[in-house]
Length: 276
Image (cartoon, rainbow, N blue to C red; front, side):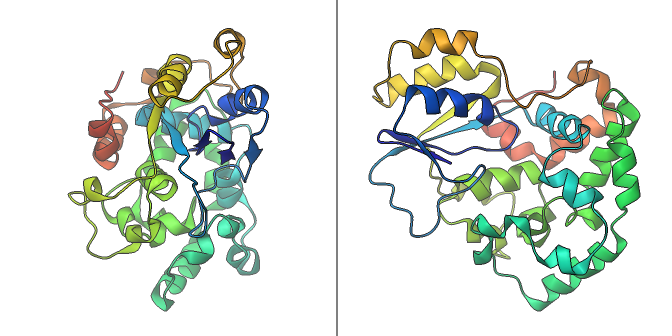
């Protein structure tokens, strides 16, 4: 989360946040970074500042998440592939990102424990061995979105009601941008009620048009910026990129493309995405 005198930028994983982060820190020098993918806490004072976020094509998002993990990087990679340990498991690294506010019940803790005991760490590691192997990716995404493995990448996703009808990406979107993220654990939640969730979001940037969307959003929200920002956006190299050598369509088959379409249909419809 980046905070300055003009706006707040919430960084959703694998949507260009690291790329924009360096530019914001450079061209808005009063900016402070409060964690990486952190959401505002209950006590956070927005002081009337506008909130900006970013979003990415869901099919591309999953592929990017997997291929980046193939570099043996990232929290989800560690969560999946680390040595099994209940002591380490209950010391959740994400607890500092408002996760101490998540309403775990005894049944949740029991399910998390069972999931950790059965977590196929060697299988996860094998699926991250080659970022240019579509078969590994297809097996990976089916494992990621399988109900029995819903605790492996993000414990809190597995606990959430959203995990019953939507994918990890939808959960992370609402966890970051929802004004009250605890609603994600309400048993009355369904795919039909997602649209009713109130968001801390005044402007959204699509990763596919990140540079132009950023300037457009600053202008539309009347946020002043230095004229040097525009040419800097054109010259800036992308950060945290993966090492895959093929387009998105190379990795998906009909089954896995439809799996993402079903699990992430809320975001797909809301932001007019299609499988390319």
